[in-house]
Amino acid sequence: MPVPWLDASTDSDFPSVDRALIDGLLAAGGDLSTSRLIKAYRHGIFPWFNELDPILWWSPDPRLILFTGRIKISRSLKKTIQTTAITITMDQAFGDVMTACAARRQTNADNADSGTWIHPEMIESYTELHRQGLAHSIECWHEGKLVGGLYGVAIGKIFFGESMFSTMRDSSKIALVSLCQQLYRWGFPLIDCQVYSAHLASLGAEEIARNDFIKTLNQYCSIMPPPNHWQLDSDLPFLS
Image 1 (tube, rainbow, N blue to C red):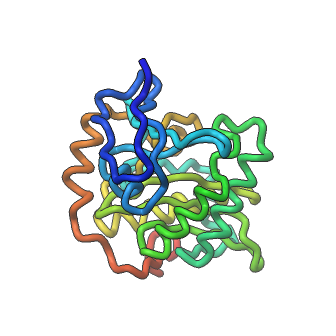
Image 2 (image 1 turned 90 degrees about the vertical axis):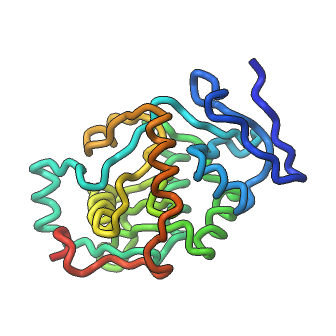
């Protein structure tokens, strides 16, 4: 069955997510404008495509999510957190985090989602979301060097995770723990992790039905978000 083609010259609506193919592919075409990206995330849809391909839009069923209050911290990770010299920041190097995530995927052949989907067009669009206060990053620093982090999009009180990277052991996990603790304090129920990965499952991510995910979006995406200037509270359990 061919997927619907979105017209880039108009703000055409997405088809119902119930029309997605078995692998989650829902539509193709359109553009990566801020308005279209917000509409996509708000309805449980995200873009994922290689640089030379048309824009592809996805809404998989089931959906992988991580409840912010249920992240699993292994004994070894807990030890690392207690002894690490890593410093955690928020929204201090969004572009650098995206670039590092892209570089990791282009060079890590063992990565299940390796490839070139974080390409210049994506970076430009998400950087604009960041300028508008809708996309955010968590950074891990060691001796002044960026060694890990993640980024995603926040609409209302839902955080849609996009990608993470690590050049120092457990740094991306530490970023995720910090983000979960802060989002939990702000009343965010979950982080969208999109599709299953063993790595995220080991940290507590679980699959839920797409319909249940959409219901959660309808409940939380319209709630007043936290202040525009995101920052980590200094008394979070990880930081204190």
